[in-house]
Image (cartoon, rainbow, N blue to C red):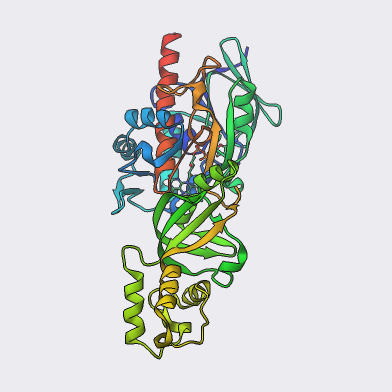
Length: 412
Ligand SMILES: Cc1cc2nc3c(=O)[nH]c(=O)nc-3n(C[C@H](O)[C@H](O)[C@H](O)COP(=O)(O)OP(=O)(O)OC[C@H]3O[C@@H](n4cnc5c(N)ncnc54)[C@H](O)[C@@H]3O)c2cc1C
């Protein structure tokens, strides 16, 4: 007769670790199965190594995909309750002016250590190097089979295998396959927080340049979302948080055959034309090569002059009203076609995934298979930058842990 755990958790990332702590603290026998040689590798890279673990203002508007599930998870486990959970693990939290929450140590490693210690203290059995390749339902529970043929049995199974973003940190498609084999629908997936790709020519020579801008995303010529913040020019496209969080909408629009573009405004809230007219009157001898220097980085200024169709070797004082108008248009509305986004290698989050229609969102329990649960990025939810994705991982996992607890209690 084999050993049967109360719950097996597949995937020792953010959602798997927190669910394991919660269940084991409640006295349940929990086994955590992780394919890599250690748990929580992706967590270490979050927030540039500082772990932006939630956002005080998280609301459904910060998410795409199964928003009703997000609403339920945020109601049951709002950021303040998640923060209290972490404080109970020895992680005091601090928020910045944008309501992004970090551990007081500003170290992702301390969040991971606290979760690992929480697991150890509560008696979670962690098995690393255990890649689950099959999840077989049977009488009274599930059998997980590893790549090497090992087997683990439990009364409930929680799939926390994450998405496809950042494969170097352990992402892969196993969780989707496991759920699909048990009758779940998988919604098409795509990179959701990733740099935007533009034709190389307009941005040539701008790699590494940063600038504050308002970015409007145009889908089929209609502005569908605006973001403001620092953008970073890349080899063939635009990056930085403001640009990257448009990736979800870009991929959805391109998939639907709608052309996309970004309109960059480097003088948001200002009258660019009036500003340039005054500048030309104040600096009539300044050649266009240097004319925008100080408003934007010099090289970007030169690119904008060219985008306006003007030569670089003309003095500002010689510009006609029409030419100033054209330059103001480039400065406040430089439009670049967007042909796609970077792939999963560079992306932070996955859009799409296991459909929430197949789950009871009050407890994250499967409607297809009794005793099966899922949480985190494997599900069809993705959030904006700013702590929203980890908030979803924590809150959906804690909700699932409660669901598992209730199911085990019922079956006693
Ligand atoms: C560079 C980077 C920075 C980020 N920064 C932030 C941030 O600051 N704030 C924020 O909110 N979000 C951030 N995110 C997103 C956030 O990290 C994820 O949304 C979150 O980790 C998802 O949690 P998860 O538990 O669903 O998946 P993961 O944390 O990815 O964990 C999944 C785990 O499952 C394991 N696994 C997969 N398949 C199997 C299998 N078959 N058997 C056993 N184990 C398996 C994996 O190895 C992994 O350990 C960032 C992402 C990246 C890539």
